[in-house]
Length: 153
Image (cartoon, rainbow, N blue to C red; front, side, top):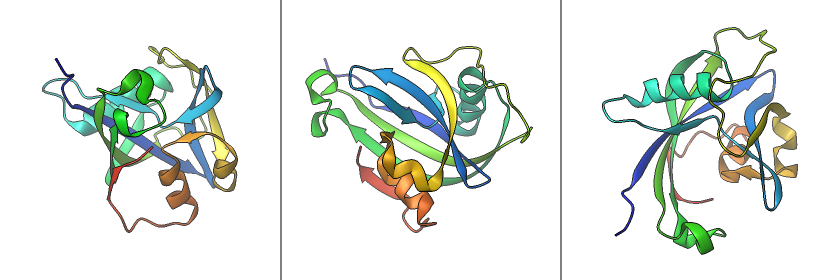
């Protein structure tokens, strides 16, 4: 039986030329992902972003406009060996911290592989393993022309 398609809502938090990301460790080393996660039944996507930010970065956010929609179809990408039957549709929202001076980023329920929360300068995003890389490139280029990005990693 194949897994159902999963919806996920993510926060794009840019402040002072830097992007707030979740730092994860996997068998390949350090990677960075956007805060957010799976939508629960009867939960609006914006509420998913709010909940996930509290769980992962320990901060309340203001959820703004939808920026991008990205699909991830596991069998088409580098991790197909173990997530070939995984299909997720991700909704990326422009967000801002309610407390922009916050320094404590300890969430109530961090992800399994999460080891921290970091701010990375937009111009440095190409030097790190960011998923999805395309959104980092678009942020740096200030390109918001494409909302639907299709299946990419």
